[in-house]
Amino acid sequence: MSHSSKGWPFLDPPNTAVFTNIRIINGGEWVHYVSHNEDDGAWQFHPFEFSNSYREAAVVSLRSMLEREPRLAELADLPLG
Image (cartoon, rainbow, N blue to C red; front, top):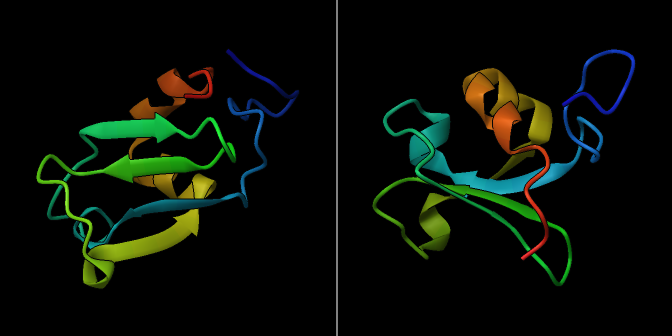
């Protein structure tokens, strides 16, 4: 589903900051878990081995996540919560 004439699938703009894990950014893991927070609308993309460690936390743009894993576009209409 496209939300713009340019084919961007998300309602959030491409430069929206999202939370992820450094193992995904470095290419060692792929996204196993996605959440779209109900309280603030934030997107989170986590690997299978979920870690709450700040050492593994990363903040990147939504566009960069979609470039790493194009299948995430399928979740663009994931409701809050």
